[in-house]
Length: 313
Image (cartoon, rainbow, N blue to C red):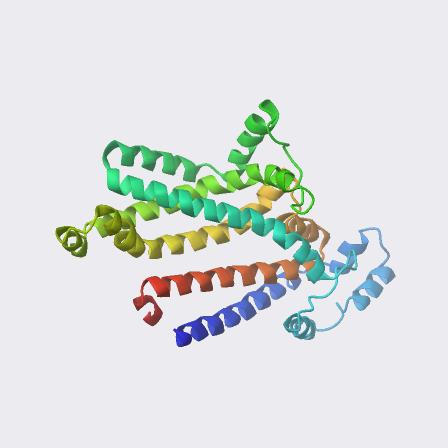
């Protein structure tokens, strides 16, 4: 197990290096005049040249990347070119907001999808058909359309919650829950559909295996057969789908945060990209990449625990 973890950690660090290198190169190789973008189109050429010198943009690209990477390794992601604030402070202040949305949506999706998938696999017949249709419809509707419908019905017509805005949990826990309920629902619906389909298919395959007939012939209660054996074997593929959906939710949160005026990483990345604030953009890229790698590492560990063959592969 230790070799398995070390192998995953080394590959994760290598992947993080590749992602940061590619992102840094793509940002600077676009050919955009960053100093003029920062000062505006009416700035004089002398001011633009001075700004480029101050930001180190007159240095070779490789030298700038080495300087940035050496700082990132020490935990220093630089300062914002606009506000002068530390990038780590800006990102960490928004990180909790985005993670609260994505983690809640993922957990709720996992629970609901497991219940729906297991139920459909066991009942089959019209129950299975209805759940498949509902799942397909849920997966086909983009989350921003779900968000619009929720705002119109729940926030405006019924006036149960505010349509936009965010309340910090340390200020008002009930207000915080009220401010994120609609974004979480908008993110959850599509995820439930995708994972439920995977759980259903894996459960049906598992229920057809010989070992299930053997367990039943020995008189093992049906609930134990399903929960302790079939569901455990079906959990591996479902976890892989859930990890992919988690990564998709990080991207989907960009749109949802903009729609509900929530100050998360998504809204930060949008605003800094339009401004050309590259240190903050790179900070967001690195933090999101680390989150994705950690999630995949956790999924690998859980799968290795559920199925020892996965550690070898």
